[in-house]
Image 1: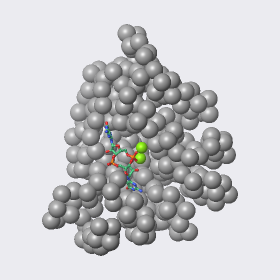
Image 2: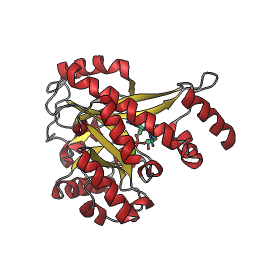
Image 3: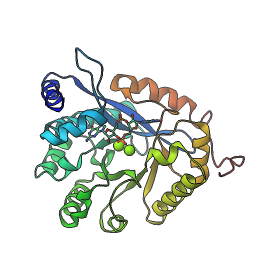
Image 4: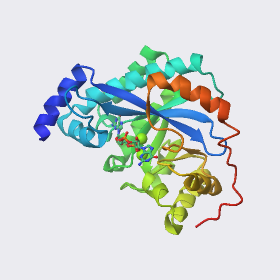
Length: 274
Ligand code: C2E
Ligand code: MG
Ligand code: MG
């Protein structure tokens, strides 16, 4: 099955079966859109769509992740470059791009980022690279060097699925990280224990002057608790599902009409912490 999937994936990359969808990241207090996360989608012509959780690990095993990820970088940077003019905002809208540890530690990675920046002309500050906590983080020297090179290009760095990986907290001090993304498993069931974890991550982020984004927000209760915890940004089906690039304009227009009104949550006094 893996070999078959690998062959299909190779075909998919060459025949434009891969696309990117974009999921809004919004301010928790006002609902205003701040940026979008680019998420890979694969729709083979003769079968059902295949989720990234299935094909990304296969791509990582067979080395296809590098050309796929180079394509993701280029496509997402080109898309984000159009937002500055079409949807000016202060600060400007950013795109978050998932990078596999396999690509991050590849010798060509920084060159690939430079190429994508140059070809698209996007402001590097509008690019956030999302990296999950992995064992690669334990190779302190190499990881730190790549992160510093990203920083000197002006690109931001987020730690994805924070709280689920293997790494030690000390990398937050040693590496130039900008944002922590709270894993959706903590947000999904916000019982007393998970709420305690969420508030602790938010506190940690604030004390280290990092931004924090909660993932997988599906209900208004979760939204209210995140506001109460002081979490700055969020993404999830409550706000919007990942959408094709062509729908972004309509989403932004309706978001601008509504933000500050419908979605204003503030520190909901009525929401009692679990
Ligand atoms: P991730 O980066 O943590 O992305 C968040 C996942 O949560 C996405 O799944 C998104 O569609 C999903 N999600 C968003 N809001 C909600 C919600 O309210 N409820 C629930 N239950 N899920 C929500 P998706 O698109 O299936 O991607 C899964 C993972 O695949 C991503 O996790 C990321 O690790 C990986 N991935 C996706 N695109 C890329 C890519 O371009 N490159 C690499 N290397 N990995 C990617
Ligand atoms: Mg991500
Ligand atoms: Mg995540």
